[in-house]
Image (cartoon, rainbow, N blue to C red):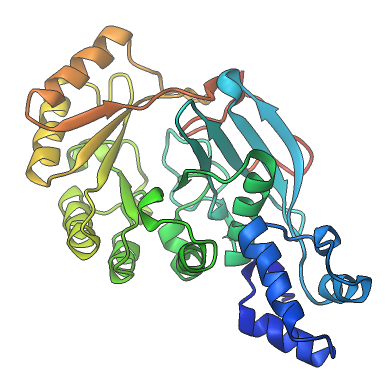
Length: 343
Protein backbone atom coordinates (compact mmCIF):
# COMPACT_ATOMS: atom_id res chain seq x y z
CA UNK A 1 0.00 0.00 0.00
CA UNK A 2 1.18 3.52 -0.80
CA UNK A 3 2.33 5.20 2.44
CA UNK A 4 0.67 8.32 3.82
CA UNK A 5 2.80 11.44 3.88
CA UNK A 6 1.01 12.44 7.10
CA UNK A 7 2.52 9.45 8.91
CA UNK A 8 6.08 9.93 7.64
CA UNK A 9 9.05 9.94 9.98
CA UNK A 10 11.97 12.29 9.44
CA UNK A 11 14.22 9.31 8.69
CA UNK A 12 11.85 8.22 5.93
CA UNK A 13 11.81 11.71 4.46
CA UNK A 14 15.59 11.80 4.54
CA UNK A 15 15.66 8.50 2.67
CA UNK A 16 13.18 9.92 0.14
CA UNK A 17 15.42 12.92 -0.49
CA UNK A 18 18.53 10.76 -0.79
CA UNK A 19 16.93 8.39 -3.30
CA UNK A 20 15.78 11.31 -5.45
CA UNK A 21 19.04 13.26 -5.09
CA UNK A 22 17.31 16.14 -3.34
CA UNK A 23 19.30 18.18 -0.79
CA UNK A 24 19.08 16.66 2.68
CA UNK A 25 17.75 19.85 4.27
CA UNK A 26 14.55 19.43 2.24
CA UNK A 27 13.53 16.54 4.51
CA UNK A 28 13.34 18.88 7.49
CA UNK A 29 11.36 21.39 5.44
CA UNK A 30 8.81 18.70 4.58
CA UNK A 31 8.66 17.58 8.21
CA UNK A 32 8.09 21.18 9.27
CA UNK A 33 5.15 21.51 6.89
CA UNK A 34 3.66 18.31 8.29
CA UNK A 35 4.22 18.64 12.02
CA UNK A 36 4.21 22.40 12.54
CA UNK A 37 1.63 23.44 9.94
CA UNK A 38 -0.42 20.25 9.41
CA UNK A 39 0.02 20.55 5.63
CA UNK A 40 -0.32 17.18 3.89
CA UNK A 41 -0.68 18.38 0.29
CA UNK A 42 2.76 19.04 -1.29
CA UNK A 43 1.19 21.67 -3.55
CA UNK A 44 0.79 23.84 -0.46
CA UNK A 45 4.45 23.44 0.57
CA UNK A 46 5.42 26.65 -1.19
CA UNK A 47 9.15 26.70 -0.41
CA UNK A 48 9.70 23.31 -2.10
CA UNK A 49 10.72 23.12 -5.76
CA UNK A 50 8.13 21.72 -8.15
CA UNK A 51 10.21 18.57 -8.68
CA UNK A 52 10.05 17.68 -4.97
CA UNK A 53 6.35 18.40 -4.75
CA UNK A 54 5.73 16.19 -7.76
CA UNK A 55 7.88 13.36 -6.38
CA UNK A 56 6.06 13.48 -3.04
CA UNK A 57 2.69 13.13 -4.74
CA UNK A 58 3.94 10.20 -6.79
CA UNK A 59 5.43 8.33 -3.83
CA UNK A 60 2.94 9.09 -1.04
CA UNK A 61 -0.77 9.48 -0.47
CA UNK A 62 -0.53 13.22 -0.08
CA UNK A 63 -3.27 13.67 0.88
CA UNK A 64 -5.28 10.47 0.81
CA UNK A 65 -8.36 12.02 2.44
CA UNK A 66 -10.60 14.84 1.23
CA UNK A 67 -13.67 16.61 2.60
CA UNK A 68 -16.66 15.29 0.66
CA UNK A 69 -19.35 17.26 2.51
CA UNK A 70 -19.91 19.24 5.67
CA UNK A 71 -22.88 20.20 7.79
CA UNK A 72 -23.22 22.61 10.70
CA UNK A 73 -25.62 22.57 13.60
CA UNK A 74 -26.51 25.19 16.16
CA UNK A 75 -23.47 26.35 18.07
CA UNK A 76 -21.37 25.97 14.91
CA UNK A 77 -20.58 22.34 15.59
CA UNK A 78 -19.40 21.06 12.21
CA UNK A 79 -19.55 17.48 10.97
CA UNK A 80 -17.23 16.58 8.11
CA UNK A 81 -17.83 13.66 5.79
CA UNK A 82 -14.36 12.56 4.73
CA UNK A 83 -13.76 10.48 1.63
CA UNK A 84 -10.81 8.13 1.97
CA UNK A 85 -8.37 7.06 -0.73
CA UNK A 86 -10.39 3.92 -1.52
CA UNK A 87 -13.76 5.68 -1.71
CA UNK A 88 -14.92 4.69 1.78
CA UNK A 89 -16.18 7.45 4.07
CA UNK A 90 -15.87 8.37 7.73
CA UNK A 91 -16.99 11.33 9.79
CA UNK A 92 -15.25 13.68 12.19
CA UNK A 93 -16.69 16.53 14.24
CA UNK A 94 -15.26 19.97 15.03
CA UNK A 95 -16.68 21.24 18.33
CA UNK A 96 -15.94 24.86 19.26
CA UNK A 97 -16.83 26.52 22.54
CA UNK A 98 -15.94 29.75 24.30
CA UNK A 99 -12.99 28.18 26.10
CA UNK A 100 -11.77 25.34 23.87
CA UNK A 101 -11.79 23.68 20.48
CA UNK A 102 -12.30 19.91 20.36
CA UNK A 103 -12.00 17.43 17.50
CA UNK A 104 -13.90 14.14 17.64
CA UNK A 105 -12.03 11.63 15.46
CA UNK A 106 -12.94 8.24 14.00
CA UNK A 107 -10.74 5.14 14.18
CA UNK A 108 -12.55 2.70 11.87
CA UNK A 109 -14.86 2.64 8.85
CA UNK A 110 -17.96 1.42 10.62
CA UNK A 111 -17.90 -0.30 14.00
CA UNK A 112 -17.89 -4.00 14.95
CA UNK A 113 -19.36 -3.56 18.43
CA UNK A 114 -22.86 -2.71 17.21
CA UNK A 115 -24.34 -1.15 20.34
CA UNK A 116 -28.08 -1.42 19.78
CA UNK A 117 -28.74 2.27 20.38
CA UNK A 118 -25.83 3.69 18.35
CA UNK A 119 -26.00 4.62 14.65
CA UNK A 120 -22.27 4.21 14.04
CA UNK A 121 -22.26 0.43 14.05
CA UNK A 122 -25.50 -0.38 12.27
CA UNK A 123 -23.70 -1.63 9.17
CA UNK A 124 -20.87 -3.34 11.02
CA UNK A 125 -17.16 -2.91 10.36
CA UNK A 126 -15.77 -2.27 6.89
CA UNK A 127 -12.11 -1.83 7.80
CA UNK A 128 -9.66 -0.22 10.19
CA UNK A 129 -8.20 3.21 9.58
CA UNK A 130 -4.45 3.49 9.23
CA UNK A 131 -2.42 5.86 11.38
CA UNK A 132 -1.97 8.03 8.29
CA UNK A 133 -5.74 8.38 7.89
CA UNK A 134 -6.27 9.26 11.55
CA UNK A 135 -3.47 11.83 11.37
CA UNK A 136 -5.04 13.28 8.24
CA UNK A 137 -8.28 13.76 10.20
CA UNK A 138 -6.30 15.81 12.71
CA UNK A 139 -4.59 17.81 9.97
CA UNK A 140 -7.83 18.46 8.06
CA UNK A 141 -9.50 19.74 11.21
CA UNK A 142 -6.52 21.91 12.13
CA UNK A 143 -6.31 23.46 8.67
CA UNK A 144 -10.04 24.14 8.77
CA UNK A 145 -10.59 25.39 12.33
CA UNK A 146 -7.17 25.91 13.95
CA UNK A 147 -5.17 23.78 16.34
CA UNK A 148 -7.51 22.09 18.81
CA UNK A 149 -7.24 22.18 22.58
CA UNK A 150 -8.57 18.64 22.97
CA UNK A 151 -8.79 15.48 20.89
CA UNK A 152 -11.34 12.75 21.58
CA UNK A 153 -11.23 9.45 19.74
CA UNK A 154 -14.97 8.98 20.15
CA UNK A 155 -16.08 9.02 16.52
CA UNK A 156 -16.91 6.00 14.39
CA UNK A 157 -15.28 2.76 15.52
CA UNK A 158 -13.85 0.97 18.55
CA UNK A 159 -10.31 2.32 18.59
CA UNK A 160 -8.90 -0.39 20.86
CA UNK A 161 -9.82 -2.99 18.25
CA UNK A 162 -7.45 -1.08 15.97
CA UNK A 163 -4.84 -0.71 18.67
CA UNK A 164 -1.60 -0.92 16.67
CA UNK A 165 -2.57 1.90 14.31
CA UNK A 166 -4.16 3.93 17.10
CA UNK A 167 -0.98 3.63 19.17
CA UNK A 168 1.12 4.94 16.27
CA UNK A 169 -1.33 7.81 15.89
CA UNK A 170 -1.28 8.71 19.58
CA UNK A 171 2.50 8.57 19.85
CA UNK A 172 2.94 10.59 16.65
CA UNK A 173 0.56 13.28 17.89
CA UNK A 174 2.60 13.60 21.09
CA UNK A 175 6.13 13.15 19.73
CA UNK A 176 5.84 14.89 16.34
CA UNK A 177 2.85 17.23 16.56
CA UNK A 178 3.76 18.13 20.19
CA UNK A 179 0.23 17.53 21.44
CA UNK A 180 -0.12 16.95 25.17
CA UNK A 181 -1.28 13.42 26.05
CA UNK A 182 -3.37 14.93 28.85
CA UNK A 183 -5.53 16.56 26.18
CA UNK A 184 -6.20 13.33 24.31
CA UNK A 185 -9.06 11.00 25.28
CA UNK A 186 -9.61 7.50 23.92
CA UNK A 187 -13.06 6.00 24.30
CA UNK A 188 -13.77 2.27 24.43
CA UNK A 189 -16.90 0.18 24.76
CA UNK A 190 -14.96 -1.92 27.26
CA UNK A 191 -12.85 -4.11 24.97
CA UNK A 192 -10.69 -5.60 27.71
CA UNK A 193 -7.81 -7.02 25.59
CA UNK A 194 -7.35 -3.61 23.98
CA UNK A 195 -7.54 -1.91 27.36
CA UNK A 196 -4.66 -4.07 28.57
CA UNK A 197 -2.59 -2.92 25.59
CA UNK A 198 -3.59 0.69 26.19
CA UNK A 199 -2.26 0.46 29.75
CA UNK A 200 1.10 -0.66 28.36
CA UNK A 201 1.57 2.72 26.63
CA UNK A 202 2.11 4.27 30.08
CA UNK A 203 1.44 7.77 28.80
CA UNK A 204 -0.98 10.26 30.32
CA UNK A 205 -3.78 9.73 27.84
CA UNK A 206 -7.33 9.95 29.18
CA UNK A 207 -9.64 6.94 29.10
CA UNK A 208 -13.41 7.05 28.69
CA UNK A 209 -15.30 3.78 29.17
CA UNK A 210 -18.71 3.57 27.49
CA UNK A 211 -20.30 1.63 30.33
CA UNK A 212 -23.98 2.60 29.85
CA UNK A 213 -25.14 0.25 32.60
CA UNK A 214 -24.01 -0.56 36.16
CA UNK A 215 -24.76 -4.30 35.89
CA UNK A 216 -24.39 -7.04 33.32
CA UNK A 217 -28.10 -7.74 32.93
CA UNK A 218 -28.89 -4.16 31.93
CA UNK A 219 -25.80 -3.89 29.77
CA UNK A 220 -26.87 -6.94 27.77
CA UNK A 221 -29.88 -4.93 26.56
CA UNK A 222 -27.59 -2.31 25.05
CA UNK A 223 -24.45 -4.09 23.78
CA UNK A 224 -24.37 -7.33 21.74
CA UNK A 225 -22.57 -10.30 23.34
CA UNK A 226 -19.79 -10.69 20.77
CA UNK A 227 -17.56 -7.93 22.20
CA UNK A 228 -19.26 -7.37 25.56
CA UNK A 229 -17.21 -8.03 28.69
CA UNK A 230 -18.55 -8.24 32.27
CA UNK A 231 -18.76 -4.91 34.05
CA UNK A 232 -16.39 -6.05 36.82
CA UNK A 233 -13.79 -7.14 34.25
CA UNK A 234 -14.05 -3.84 32.37
CA UNK A 235 -13.58 -1.83 35.53
CA UNK A 236 -10.57 -3.90 36.62
CA UNK A 237 -8.94 -3.17 33.27
CA UNK A 238 -9.77 0.52 33.62
CA UNK A 239 -8.22 0.54 37.09
CA UNK A 240 -5.02 -0.92 35.68
CA UNK A 241 -4.90 1.88 33.09
CA UNK A 242 -5.38 4.46 35.85
CA UNK A 243 -2.50 2.92 37.78
CA UNK A 244 -0.28 2.97 34.68
CA UNK A 245 -0.96 6.54 33.56
CA UNK A 246 -1.97 8.18 36.86
CA UNK A 247 -5.15 9.61 35.26
CA UNK A 248 -8.70 9.38 36.56
CA UNK A 249 -10.93 7.73 33.99
CA UNK A 250 -14.49 8.52 32.96
CA UNK A 251 -17.53 6.26 32.83
CA UNK A 252 -19.72 7.35 29.94
CA UNK A 253 -23.37 6.61 30.55
CA UNK A 254 -25.96 7.07 27.82
CA UNK A 255 -29.29 7.48 29.58
CA UNK A 256 -32.14 5.66 27.79
CA UNK A 257 -35.79 5.68 28.77
CA UNK A 258 -37.04 2.57 30.51
CA UNK A 259 -33.76 0.67 30.24
CA UNK A 260 -31.03 2.20 32.43
CA UNK A 261 -32.65 5.33 33.91
CA UNK A 262 -34.13 4.13 37.20
CA UNK A 263 -33.06 5.41 40.64
CA UNK A 264 -31.56 1.99 41.41
CA UNK A 265 -29.43 2.21 38.27
CA UNK A 266 -28.29 5.67 39.34
CA UNK A 267 -27.37 4.51 42.84
CA UNK A 268 -25.47 1.48 41.53
CA UNK A 269 -23.61 3.62 39.01
CA UNK A 270 -22.69 6.22 41.60
CA UNK A 271 -21.37 3.60 44.00
CA UNK A 272 -19.32 1.97 41.26
CA UNK A 273 -17.79 5.29 40.21
CA UNK A 274 -17.05 6.31 43.79
CA UNK A 275 -15.41 3.00 44.70
CA UNK A 276 -13.27 3.01 41.53
CA UNK A 277 -12.35 6.72 41.80
CA UNK A 278 -13.91 7.35 38.39
CA UNK A 279 -15.91 10.25 37.01
CA UNK A 280 -19.35 9.89 35.42
CA UNK A 281 -20.28 11.62 32.19
CA UNK A 282 -24.05 11.46 31.86
CA UNK A 283 -25.27 11.56 28.25
CA UNK A 284 -29.03 11.90 27.68
CA UNK A 285 -29.76 9.76 24.63
CA UNK A 286 -29.58 11.40 21.21
CA UNK A 287 -32.23 9.75 19.07
CA UNK A 288 -31.14 8.09 15.83
CA UNK A 289 -34.40 6.83 14.40
CA UNK A 290 -34.50 3.53 16.29
CA UNK A 291 -36.79 2.29 19.08
CA UNK A 292 -34.86 3.90 21.94
CA UNK A 293 -35.99 7.15 23.54
CA UNK A 294 -34.53 9.90 25.72
CA UNK A 295 -35.92 10.07 29.27
CA UNK A 296 -38.04 13.01 30.35
CA UNK A 297 -36.10 15.99 31.80
CA UNK A 298 -37.27 15.29 35.34
CA UNK A 299 -36.03 11.69 35.09
CA UNK A 300 -32.63 12.90 33.89
CA UNK A 301 -32.41 15.38 36.75
CA UNK A 302 -33.41 12.74 39.31
CA UNK A 303 -30.85 10.27 37.95
CA UNK A 304 -28.06 12.83 38.13
CA UNK A 305 -28.94 13.81 41.71
CA UNK A 306 -29.24 10.20 42.88
CA UNK A 307 -25.84 9.30 41.46
CA UNK A 308 -24.28 12.44 42.92
CA UNK A 309 -25.73 11.67 46.36
CA UNK A 310 -23.48 8.59 46.55
CA UNK A 311 -20.46 10.88 46.55
CA UNK A 312 -19.58 10.24 42.92
CA UNK A 313 -18.33 13.02 40.69
CA UNK A 314 -20.84 13.42 37.85
CA UNK A 315 -21.24 15.87 34.98
CA UNK A 316 -23.88 16.03 32.29
CA UNK A 317 -22.65 16.11 28.69
CA UNK A 318 -23.12 19.55 27.15
CA UNK A 319 -25.41 18.88 24.22
CA UNK A 320 -23.90 20.13 20.98
CA UNK A 321 -24.59 19.06 17.43
CA UNK A 322 -27.68 16.87 17.86
CA UNK A 323 -29.63 18.69 15.16
CA UNK A 324 -26.83 18.04 12.68
CA UNK A 325 -26.56 14.36 13.73
CA UNK A 326 -23.08 15.17 15.03
CA UNK A 327 -23.72 14.32 18.67
CA UNK A 328 -22.70 11.26 20.67
CA UNK A 329 -24.09 8.08 19.13
CA UNK A 330 -25.25 9.75 15.93
CA UNK A 331 -22.13 9.46 13.79
CA UNK A 332 -22.18 6.83 11.08
CA UNK A 333 -20.59 5.96 7.78
CA UNK A 334 -22.91 8.05 5.66
CA UNK A 335 -22.16 6.60 2.25
CA UNK A 336 -19.94 7.87 -0.51
CA UNK A 337 -22.21 10.58 -1.85
CA UNK A 338 -23.85 12.50 0.97
CA UNK A 339 -24.68 12.75 4.63
CA UNK A 340 -28.15 11.42 5.29
CA UNK A 341 -29.75 13.62 7.91
CA UNK A 342 -31.91 11.97 10.56
CA UNK A 343 -33.93 15.04 11.43
